[in-house]
Image 1 (cartoon, rainbow, N blue to C red):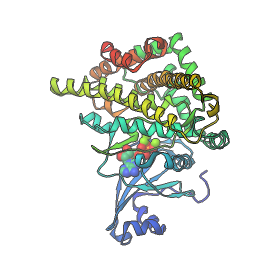
Image 2: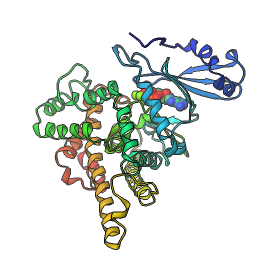
Image 3: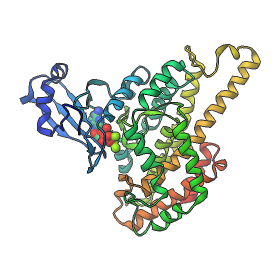
Image 4: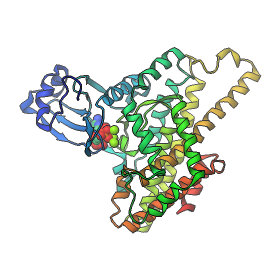
Length: 418
Ligand code: ADP
Ligand code: MG
Ligand code: MG
Ligand code: MG
């Protein structure tokens, strides 16, 4: 059963619903008869509407009691509580890196937020071959701001533990990550939707690869036990909305305390898959080559920006977390050691980034939630040929991590695996 008072809002219900929220009415101007409503849902899970009035517009997102693209798959509407909590928690740290929150309705599990327009979903921009110079560095800055400030480097443990306890209730979506991302690609299950028959060999080899499954199991433990910082949990190129000069991270419903590398890895994985997918797009060869080079450059910029921003926040932190007591490292030797500690910490995030990037690629190619970057390649043979190298790279990233000590090693490897 649904929570008391919950009902699914349809497109036609939206004006009357908004009319009951005075602050939003004022923002739109006029009344329900003056408002237009557009259904823009394109994710897998939720309903999303854009509402425009004479004075302004808003975005309304409602959690449905099932998976939007799969109605007989029930899913707890409480996920909206965590998307809302994620926005509230990060607001002091991320500035305009996310849409502004206007209203939360804990009965209908609805979030009313800033309407992002003319922004487009980054994934769409990547598929179209658009140069979006701010997307990678801004997303990197968002992740650094969000994770540094909620880690033990910045937050006293009491505040962090309260938060961990709260987000630990986000179990319906953590179960999705556990099953769809971290388990399904390495077993036989009805939900796997890899290209048949072309990718059957790859799926079978993953199921029987004990080295691969050993590595996967190690990172499952990482996901379950490493409450390093508040992470987004679903930070693929469909969770970033962009213009040429503005970038916003949306859709934090998978938020939890977890390894920072899950967010950085998700973003990099989607850039890597875009690179491979472009190999199968019908574009002039020179354009394609230039765009693929641009993508590789964005991966480098993304990691460099994340690392720099995270280190800068750490070096300038005024409120110390409980990880490294400030008065341990005040003399010359201490200060030098602190530089090493910081480098090691970032190396740890990088190692997780590599592993979770690989896990995210595997799940998008073998698992349930296939991505538009590949789905637009209608010829299945060509699609499979653009997917296989991503899986080969992912397997190497998971089973030979020592070969990928820095971002240059990954950028080197991508073209070699094609
Ligand atoms: P889901 O959880 O179902 O994936 P998302 O939060 O990703 O839902 O939103 C689905 C789509 O709705 C996005 O791809 C985007 O096109 C649109 N959208 C979401 N939030 C906004 C917003 N604040 N402004 C404009 N469009 C938005
Ligand atoms: Mg989404
Ligand atoms: Mg989605
Ligand atoms: Mg979502």
